[in-house]
Image (cartoon, rainbow, N blue to C red):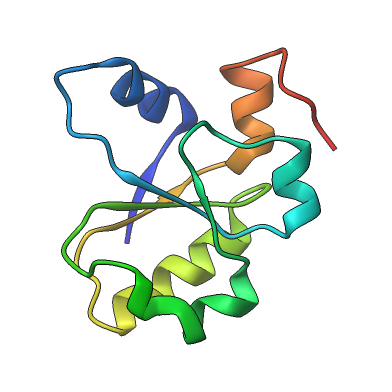
Length: 107
């Protein structure tokens, strides 16, 4: 499984020439409402097995959660189910808020 730090993702998202990955936020709706990355799609972890057909197996997908554990589990699940380009965001939204965007709420 590939991993990406929050600073690496921030650099990629800031680069207009770089292809934008699909940002899959696997947290709960209340967490997503508290804070999220612009353009992220919410798909809570427990809904991913039933909704995986909504995702493109060939698209680069960055899985995001609060600290990186749930997103790692979802990334592993997707890989086992034929998704070839899945990345876990190391440290999750908490790391994003503390290392990239200090104005983002934490919880």
